[in-house]
Length: 85
Image (cartoon, rainbow, N blue to C red; front, top):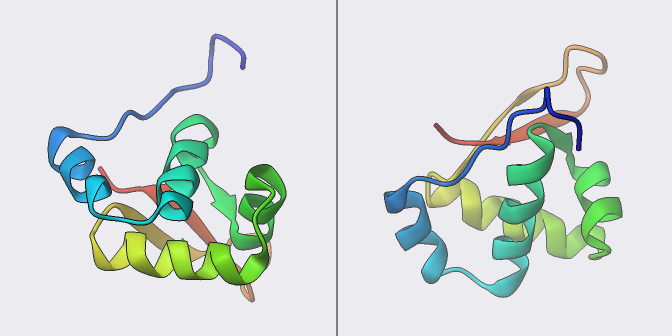
């Protein structure tokens, strides 16, 4: 990680929300903490989790308000995920 990259650390309320989530969701959140913005396929590659597990984790994280998603500017068929502010 270069010195110019920003590491987003989860807020205290996000940390509390993560306590109740499955380990896969915690791993996805940690990877997003270090990588800022990733697609679902990039998350699967980084976490070494199956795509289905990543989808489930992202759904749980979005429902808890820990992760935000938006359409990719590069490929509108894909969504990119970031930690919620």
